Length: 203
Length: 203
DNA sequence: ATAGGTATTATGACCTAGTCTTAATAGCAG
DNA sequence: CTGCTATTAAGACTAGGTCATAATACCTAT
Image (cartoon, rainbow over all chains, first blue to last red; front, side, top):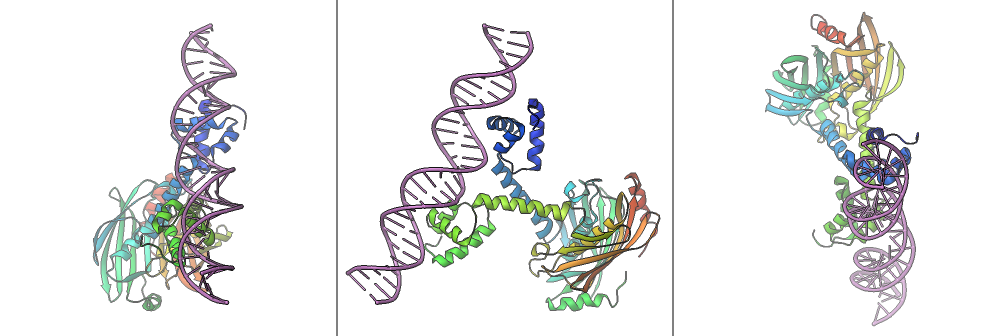
């Protein structure tokens, strides 16, 4: 490291270095900045940055939660209202991790995921699977905006349900979709049900 | 804890306990199983389970990578071939985290995300955004199956591109989609481009 | 019953990556 | 020269381990 930055500069740099390598130890930081370990510790203290093990632990916990919420939850977003077989509302807070870095525009599949999982959740059956979906993005969604998706089962015949979803941000429509969702009794039915889609059904 | 399990039982239980709380320490494990810390260490040694800090570190790293690959990467899945403006192929390995727990069937939005991001990546422009999408799930996708998506830009007029995507598992079609993707020069155009969609364009 | 093996527990030295406290030193400004 | 900030050092302690060595306990087969 270019020997001796001013303290203020070092503090600033320290934050960013730790941020993009949270696993780094004080010893390593000390050698990077050409100062003693004690100085690094004082700096961390001043900046309120916890020790490396603590940082690691938090990362692990956060990430675990995040993956759960993104991937494992049965519904993407928070279900705030459901009438099974009829309608439901879910809310999804977007953040910069969901967006393209360059533009901060949320990737399309997030709105889709919210709408799709809501549509599936509405169908009153043991197992429900999406057969087809037609969606429209009305305006780009920016990181930080709150997506409110409202879904309605508009018709159903047999195991086939048509669900319409409209997603708004502060009352403004940003996304709409129409999903064909199939209720399935046992998983053996699945192939038949979804296979059947290709024979008919065109939006 | 019910005092004294047989060693084999303890080893088995130990694995599962650690698995669903990787942060747990040997001390805590010892008190859970009513054995000494040393015994727990020997057990871990036997099972090849690393210490709690190491487990935490791995969790943090894995999760970090995972979130990157799931959320931050510009494309969902691995791009294995791209001819900008023409065609591309991406591969996505599914796993149980992407699936409904009960059925091990992969949530619909993953196939969508792969196809959508591939479609967007193909469009040769500074920024490209999805306007509409029509997709069809031909058969359920099971956790562990490898999705190979092949996308082709079938036409474009001005900033509007039609991209068709077909996703297969071991040669079998499982998902198809047609995406309208808009190339955007500056982000000011975005609203106009996407707003324009609703005036026309029906699949 | 006694020898042998497995399982368990204990002990002590060492490690990393810190904590917290106290103290010494360096460099500069008024 | 005094005072201030910044830096470094030293010492004692912590958690959560590793590794090696040894003692004990319990069961089983001869």
